[in-house]
Length: 112
Image (cartoon, rainbow, N blue to C red; front, side, top):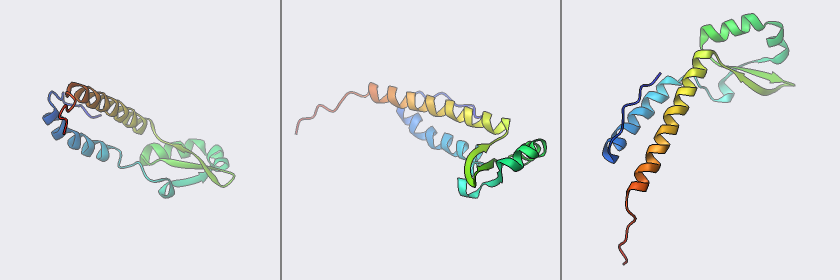
């Protein structure tokens, strides 16, 4: 999981956000576009649930489930879920920091 460094100034914030973005992207490289997912029918998954879950855990790749030939759900392993949850926390913190830094900057009062 990413450990985020404290950001104290807008300059530090500008320097660290791309670094955090790069880490976040590397962490979720397994997150594929829907059209590139391995998919199985929900009936196949139900009949082979134990082996399907084992495959998801070992491969660390999401599995798409089709219901009536339409992609209806995506299943991920626990570690992948934790990574996404961690990214949500980082994103929430970054958004809050940006809001606070924007609120701290006085509005431009130049009247030209």
